[in-house]
Length: 86
Image (tube, rainbow, N blue to C red; front, side, top):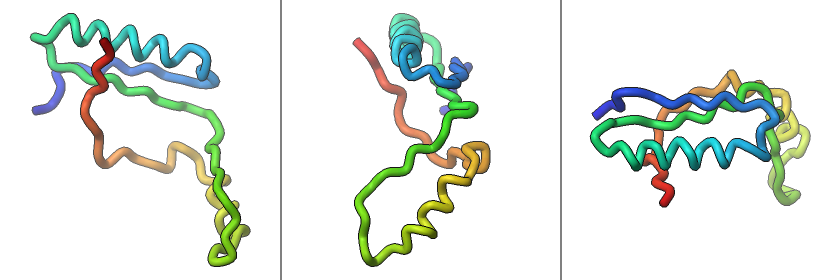
């Protein structure tokens, strides 16, 4: 079943505050169980963070190319369940 509405939280350098916003939205959804909603956090500009261990089987130069891919080039194709915060 598709949600009746979406709560969209746009984020740009919001690491310090986005958690509080998501928690408030999740509490509101939990307090209104008769409504079917979803929370979408849209990161609209932050850098991608790529980390890991060096491995001789990989060409690190190829992996570094991932750092040049914009987040807008990706699309969500599968979503998970709504996180319920108590």
